[in-house]
Length: 165
Ligand SMILES: [Zn+2]
Image (cartoon, rainbow, N blue to C red; front, side, top):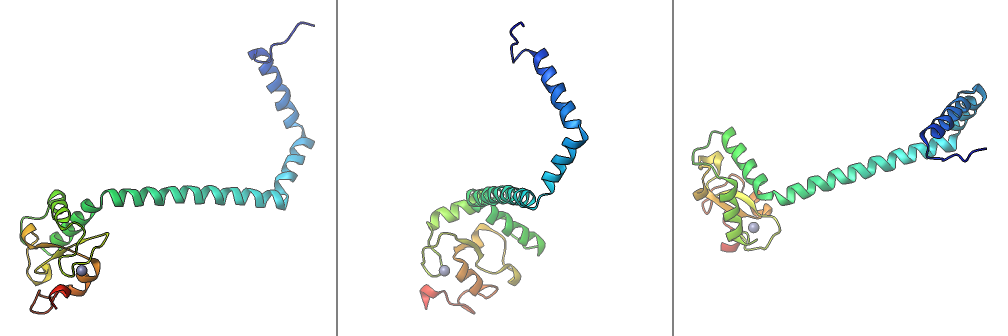
């Protein structure tokens, strides 16, 4: 009998044909189906699907977080521009690079309370809802807490910044 090379395509083909024929046997098919229906096999499959899902979701969340932290300034400026447009505020608008310049100058310090925070938000000194312009001249870097406490109040007249109290 001549030596058969296992990687010879002809040998491979023959092997595959044999395997297919074996798998097509009704008793083999039934056995495989029965195996797939075993509760422990189903549980195993469900677990593997769940793990796969969690792995993907974890990655998606991580990607989104990474994008947001790399594009924080862009996101902030974009959000403010959208709001200004919505209420038809005047002013020249604030570009992401202008906003970044404000943030860089603030160096993490809130303009109103002097607290160092990881994330500064864009505050309109004269609120847009009170006729303020969406303009770099009307923008301040503020912590979330000051920004939400100041809200649509007028600076000094209706809201005294914590660092001036
Ligand atoms: Zn503050």
